[in-house]
Amino acid sequence: MPSRFVPYTTDVEIAEPGFAEHVQTVIARMERYITESVSAEGTGQAVRDAHAKGYGLVRGEVEILDGLPAEYAQGIYARPGRHDALVRFSNGSPHAGADARLGRATGLALKMFDIDGPTLLEDEPDSRTFDYNTINAPVFFCNTVEHYLFIQELFLSAGEYFAQGKSGRHRFYRDYVTGKGTLSEDEWAWEEFLTFLIVSQRPLVNVLLSTYTTMGAVRRGDYIAKVRLTPDPGCAAAVVRREMDLASAAEVFRPALVAELSERPYTFDLQVQLCADLERMPVEDLTVEWPEQLSAYVTVARLRLPQQDISGEENLKRMDALSFTPWRVPEAHRPLGSIMRARKEVYRRSSTLRHRLNQQERREPRAADDVPPYR
Image (cartoon, rainbow, N blue to C red; front, side, top):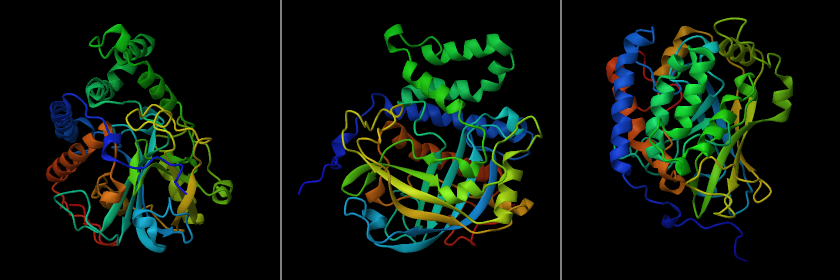
């Protein structure tokens, strides 16, 4: 019987006019920000231009489940097995200050080891690692690299806007919708702005309690998918430090994560949602949440985090020596859509520059205990 899911073909992606030029502009701004961050962020180190502040590097294991339906048993999920893993929890902000200044978007970056097949990264095809970059929202606040040009500029200077109180916030919102005055009224970025508001109002909870998604679509072998990591209900119910009070201390997310993992193990279900309708589940429009009534999320693997101590300063140093990119995957899991395509070179250049400025060895680890030392 034919599958009810949309088959993957190369024409599900749409070429964005001016894509290459826009990506180069994004890279130039990103490199300028990272270079200036050595002094501007107060850490003495270059930081990422997004997800700059990490909350901890956590060891884990991904178990790919047996007996999956054929449509879900695709790519690396075609065979059951267990893979060592590392997880970086982070805040989505480009800044590294107190948690109260950074916003509510958080991230979970997952790296799996011992994965067969070449990656889509030309400079490290044989790394045998597989990355997911996810955030605590099912949507993303930008659809095109052209729009990301003004959104990137707004985010990097958001602190200056919001420091001016109500008038600054209103100016930020106006500049977001109008593209800083570059968009005609019928092109105003309403969908992206409303999505930004959704992301900015995520609940202030322990990072273990959030559900994290890939935002953009990815190839799933013969199909098209989105991927998420959602807390195991039993593990979530056991979390003691649940809500984060940003006024209580400069650091709230990391101490809560450290304390929970020191007391008990934790599990996330890794789930896949296959595309069943390209109109209602679009590849290029990241502001649209794919309806679960059209295609439910199916658990294909489990990410298990054992009880562990991540409290030391060395944990943070090793965490910041790592790089994650959605393109460190085999062809069967290719990222799809304009924004996802842009991430390939942007993430590579960001990682290269950050490691050079920090005098860190840029080397993809072969195993979870092979993270290069921080210099």
